[in-house]
Figure 1: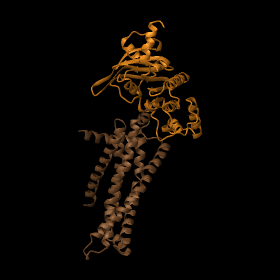
Figure 2 (figure 1 turned 180 degrees about the horizontal axis):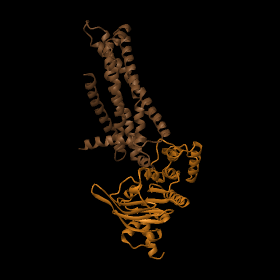
Figure 3 (figure 1 turned 45 degrees about the vertical axis):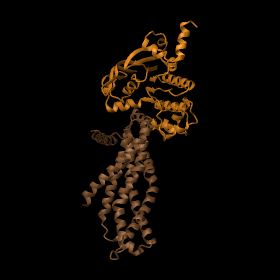
Figure 4 (figure 1 turned 90 degrees about the horizontal axis):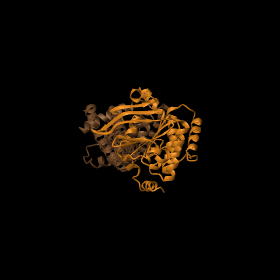
Length: 245
Length: 254
């Protein structure tokens, strides 16, 4: 029953976010601030993880290709498919649920605990719009992060496969182009967009409606990470079933 | 002026406010006192529109809050200043940005004019020179003064203060009390203050509502509260050792 209540409360929150809008000049400033904190601030860790995981995918594939009848171009093919279809959109989003999601929950939760949200409400400001709308808009640029992740993942795979001596550069590029389906990129960016909305709103919900003190802010961050990850995994399954099967 | 008539509010079946009637007059410091759990904060939040009363009326200058349209409620909120117990300053903003916030949200003044108004208000609360500091870099007393500055910057008609001097040393608490009283007089504001602090009652208690278990148990002013024989009130007023000794001394004619 409490789950149903929370789901209802979540959708009412979304409605409230798009209710009375904050003054445009203030909102513009907040959006740029959120892009800086949520998106630009994540580029470093996303780049690092993407490059090295791309490399690991290539090495693992290469080491498992024992049959001489299977062409080495498969290393690039497998790396490309796994990075574009799953690793960049889904795996990075789970990481972002930990990084960005926890940040959103704890920052909004701290504002709740210290009555800053009450202060906004007393002033007649729609606190949901003021706090969450800029985060949603900022997360619209999240596919840009995933595009970088895809690119660096494939670069990592190239570096590991070519400089590791598993395959030649030409063969890798051939494998990369082999059997390329454009729709897979569309699928990846479509689910990235959904994950972006999940990453902005579920942690915001857990922060906004938290009760208690500083300890509960920590609990809310953990709960938010768990639920954001669970919803991402479920949505990933549904979207894959609907678009690819 | 704010008038509360027969106000009731319950949470989970437990009645917190049991029919409060009180008039909060303009140009005066109206204090709500009482023990923890007596319903003071709930009353304040009902008056602010953060809680919807189950029964009863809250009138702002003769008009019931429940009859306000959404637009009228928004307009009314622009006329309200609130000093929260913990200050509720925005951590990510400097002192100047915090004080400027209501002006930025609700007025269309040029930045230079905004800065001038903020400087004027900060000077009023003796915080000139702290403009670029963040809330974490200033003391609790200064935070309270920033909170007062933010509450009055937009020239409110109503000022609500939730325990404005809790956690402050007696000297700073007196400074805050006097500041609130001066601002109230200067601008003819309806000021509502929640407090536990009997020193505040002694300093600025022009109109006092004493709540006990959700009921308005007594009302009067600071000259009356120390003379009343109402046991409910005296138990609260003389609960501190200092006031007990003062009373004993008075009774002994010292």
